[in-house]
Length: 485
Image 1 (cartoon, helix red, strand yellow):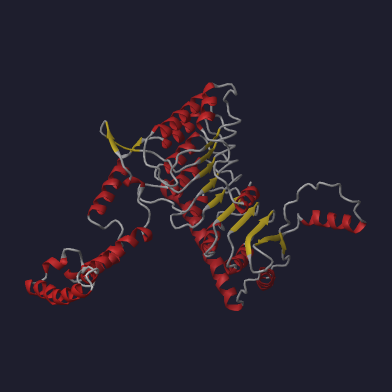
Image 2 (spheres, rainbow, N blue to C red; image 1 turned 180 degrees about the horizontal axis):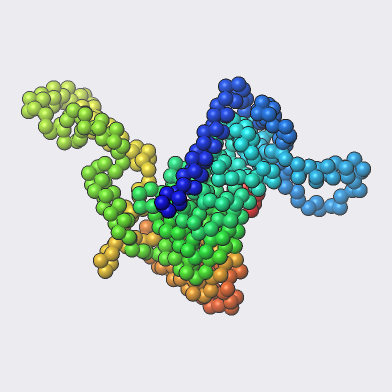
């Protein structure tokens, strides 16, 4: 009876969230039948708000460009300019939808900002119609919008319908139940995700770590993840480190301003160097190796069935050898005489081109498909990396894809610093082929921890790391990160 009582609230919450998602989707479909979005946010948004019965419709405005200090002293402002500045200052606190455009075309919206006003179910239904209609939408910034765990599944569904969306900033939206991991599924297309100041604890960190990677699946799209200003402790850092074991897409991770000490720092450092596989990882590795040996690792079940239904003459390069002897003998005999006549007339032309038009033409077609297959297939699983055996364990070289790790403002002492120092020395000591995107850690931020500024280990760490900003960033990416910060 106790177990049923414990499951009841969870089941009710899950059912309520599912019903909320269906309700928002149903309303969005009904609104879509009545009104077809034009891709002009200034036109579509007010119209859909009016149809949804929203009384106070937020305005759609352009995000003001960043202001820089002028070289010359500004002139004395007029009364009209002073009033305009006051109005613009207080209009910031009014609900509005700010947009950024690629150019002057109103259809070229690349980023949408919603800040400081609560999104209700009706508003989320309106956004579920407006945002997917923006063909160039790349970033969505939601700051303190009162998001709840009931609306988060609907938001995830909405974001999945935006084809070019790559960045999501969801900050200042604490949830009582851990649910942010649903934004990081294996089918997610987000490349940049910021979850600052969301009161994320160890329970949510466990689910986020599982979304980064498990022995059977991993996130392959996320490039940067910001988890700063949360409540992640050593336990949560261990969960994040577990997710980094088999993740090879994440390049930047920020865990600044959390509650991580030496235990969590050691677990994060261990992932950067060689580590032994667990029993579940060894089982998955053997399955992948067996599938690769059988030639099934890059084929879907439909392709496998299609290959089994093909005739034996089309399955492999050994098929022509199984043809009847009569066919092998007749085909070359017909081609020898015209080849000799052409050699007498044009001795410089070898017979190979004509031979390639015969039986070898099929082989060249198969080789062409085999050359194109790696481009279409997914990258190899980390468990298929070159491993070694040590004292009865299977050891992988470690995560060398992570380039930036921010751990400022935590509780790390010289013990955790020593673990990172050993990991960095091991990465630089390893002589292995340079793999694109796996150069090893290039930036490690440990300032504002419990490490003395005069620590020799800290000085040695700074010597191993390259100069600041080793990766030049595009101007647009820097602006996005600054706006998310």
